[in-house]
Image (tube, rainbow over all chains, first blue to last red; front, side, top):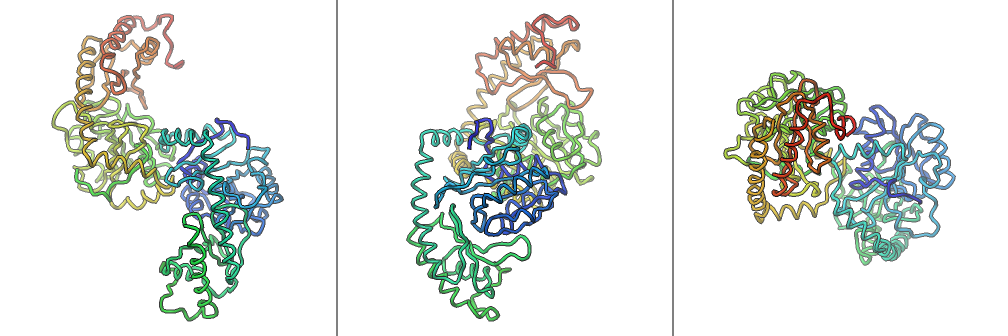
Length: 313
Length: 313
């Protein structure tokens, strides 16, 4: 992406970037389209600004653009590595989404939270790159590539929005700690961030290969993905409740999450993060998960004594 | 003040504390009463949340409580050292304000931005201390006592508001950089902040005495104050425009500000900050200001060639 320093608004993580966009663009009652399953925190944020959040399904090519309401003021997307499914928004869908935005005057938020870690070659161009019309607001973060506790993210927004976004930042919290930004700028300028991402990608790619190898033995269908620090998998036995599996796994020390649908009709599934763990724990962890799934299969109505309902988590 | 750790919500400076309060308490159209003259940034922030901001005059005892609209949902005040006039909210007014809040169900924000630096003994109890009913939200900051670039402030809010405030913080920007908070906590625990404030107060008190001594020779009426890092002074010659004096002073390297009224009927005046300067520059700076005031007096309609109108600043 070709970007000038003036195009970048530094934020306190992705979360503040989304909040600033919401402050500037949304009025109460505005429709915001979000991916389903999707990033619930973003949906909650838009709702807190009075928006009407409409979940839009995701298939193997990413968000189903045909299902985005024509009146949506804003479309929130994760094109590089859909959260949480992991699919890549196809080039066809990217063009379709940009055409939708141009036709209906919608803003598109491209939340690119972890695609620094690429496990397959040839990434697609970002929406921000492909967009000739200035409808895309690109959001990046250093939470995954470095540390969430840095609280550093940024947004690239069309010049027409920039003054309003900067004014909103000024009103919201003034500005962020400048010494953190200065240290990070130096870390980037000296090439240390690029080196860290290259090294970390090697580790993550190896770890991810182990995850996929182990998941291949389990009664799950892994969702294809090309980047990032987690993979999602649908349960092939529809009678097994993902939330119950997650709870049982937690009791055995294996941390994973269930896909959390925002609307109805979304398939159950598991999300396995491999960023905040060690490579040696992947194989034993997923094997423990496998034993749980083998035990859970076929007895959905007779849960064992240690199995909790999703509501009790 | 007696406060538990759970009562404290750490924020990104005063600004975010005010933003969180506004998010949680205000609906579009709500009336917010602010001091006039007052802290314009706060007024702008409340307005950005759709509030109707109503300026309330300040006299020698602080905000004139009788003039606060009965329907105000929130009253924004700076009781220890009114910004920018510097007066202390009298004990009588404090009680009157708390009674107003209790009677009308209004929230009171007590922005105590710089009263760590006390130049006179016996501070009054804070509104937060005096409030038996939980209507006061106390806001503090380390921007004056340490550094604005730390971006660390806090609010103490009634337990009934705390969950909403914490949820709003989570949605707004997640959380602040934890290592900064940890470093500051250690700085406080080891007594270093208290020591710094004691030492800095000695320097500031001496510097302030110089400011007052020099201002006594000028055609201004200094507003009495007991704390903080600035003093305000009304111009005794009503024909002199404060903004023009400020602009002329800036051209001679003397930085000060004009009182900026939010509504009509507020007297002109100057605000002299002595925090971010050196003691040695006080006397020559104010003497230069004095020469400007002497030159400006009596010729309000014939400005000199180097004098700019307020609009051109």
